[in-house]
Length: 91
Image (tube, rainbow, N blue to C red; front, side):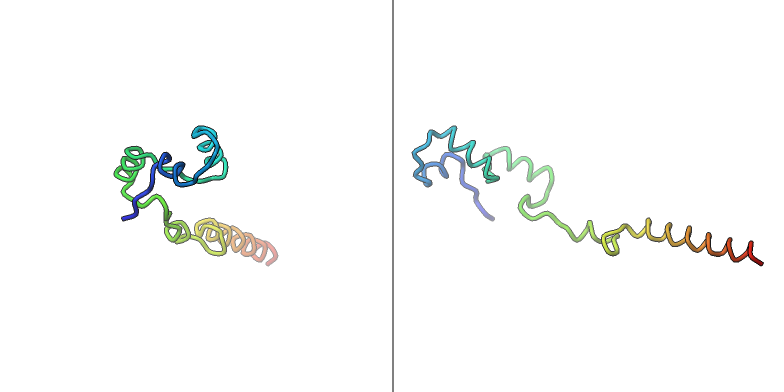
């Protein structure tokens, strides 16, 4: 289990000369995630997953070359239907 440090702890460790509020805004602008005790804990309980590692394997399960399998099957059926119709009309 990784224990995240609070914003106040990280501010003190950084040794920054900026006031806390400006330092916090700068860190947020850089994209740093600063956890708040209580808020992050509640989110983790509700979601039941680790926030740092989103699972990508579930998303890519139904995809081939980045396209959804259902769309590819539907497209193939439409194309084969059009080809079969053209061949039927020609004869």
